[in-house]
Image 1 (cartoon, one colour):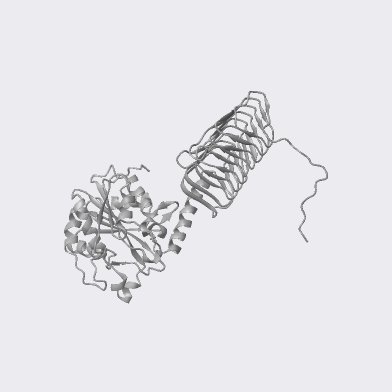
Image 2 (cartoon, one colour):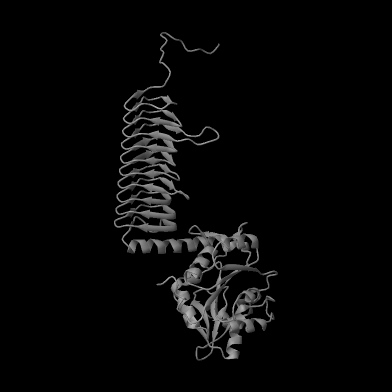
Length: 469
């Protein structure tokens, strides 16, 4: 499906997003619509979906903690914010957005805490509206508690939406509910909103009352009833957020498995960003992928790895408990490399072909050329490591002098012994060897053995001090 699905419509589509609620049941200092699902704010999911369909403009209605919500929303192009104060109901909320809407189009009303509505569903809803009808997104629920009920006449034509607190026992028995999502001609909506009253149990202006007005005005009202209740599920509590997280992640897992990825357990797999995989990729349990991650053909990822903003080339193996976080700079792992277990690759780590990075090795802002190895308990920061270098256990680059970072250059075929400190800026010449336990502060010649440590002294017949009696 095109990411600009609305572009071919005869009338433009504008979006109104309800995002003014407090979300008391979340018991959080963070606004409800900014709570994270799959690494993105709930509101971010809604905005990305809408903008991806090619809408003209988006108006976000804010209220509770409006500064934070506005700051997030306006990072997106074509998004403006209005404030609903005081908050007198959903109809009153849309009233605040109307001055920002143009009468030549359709208005699509979305909820900022309903993150998983599929683009295909919204496309069908807007097509049903067509600029000349009201289209409501509905679903049948086994337990419709809390939702407005769809009321139909004997001919099954939609007549009204009844909010639960105002419904009769017979009306509450209806299982078809209104999702909070509708598409409607903007010019008609403007006139209808002006006629809303607040004679109800809540004393609020209900947007749902415009349905009865449409029937009275002769504007056709259609219901697009979908099968997937998770598409219209909102978030009002941590439990609901966690439930939707699992729905989202299971859909991600299913999509990757359909593309050929081998997941050890699809219920223990999390994508909190964008993951692309080549052929014959294998991913063990409890792995988390954040930001943008690409896995080449034949990559194997062991259990309990966290990988963010990284490109892992074909044939590489990421052993269990490895942490890779490229942040803005990114991390690159070359073909056939072996990483981990318990390795940490930080921003700017750039590893060549057949590189080995072993347990408890940390690499930051450093390049390791083809065949280089750092297998145990080591640190490489701000370093350039040549081909086939062997970097010993317990060795570090001392790259920070307390004020500035400095680079270490280790040329090809160097062997660095265990427990060495390379004090940057320093260059270790090609083919050289640094003896174990050395602290190197000066450049070394190519092919040389460099030993920089205190002379060993042994004192015969030495007695340890004893405690006084």
